[in-house]
Amino acid sequence: MNKFNDVEFNVGDEIIHIDGRIGTVKSICTCERCTERGFHEPYVEYTNGDSDYVSTYSAETGFPNFYKIGERIFKDNLMSLFEMYRLIDQYNKEIIDRQIAIERLEQVIKDYK
Image (cartoon, rainbow, N blue to C red; front, side, top):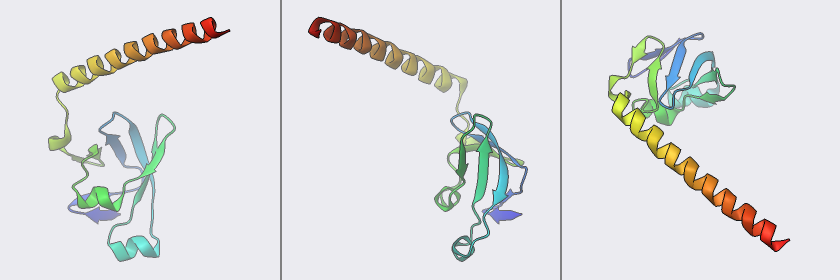
């Protein structure tokens, strides 16, 4: 078990990152450096294949990049559905802009040949 600011970590705990990735704590670092800092960094493997450590910085700043760690839910980090839909619209516009740019570049390449 690893406890920091009333947040406990255990191997097997579910982690939900604010970007939507869901993962599991696979191990908790017990190296000398982590011990000196006072926070043993949990190693997380996400279902999409990504992996990462929950950093000391994240712990010191109140875990702002997480919705859930183990049994703890960070309500202040929860994004509203409105915010999520707004982000989806923003990303869709960016995708369209990039598709247009690709089409223009393809035409330039075609004209160059």
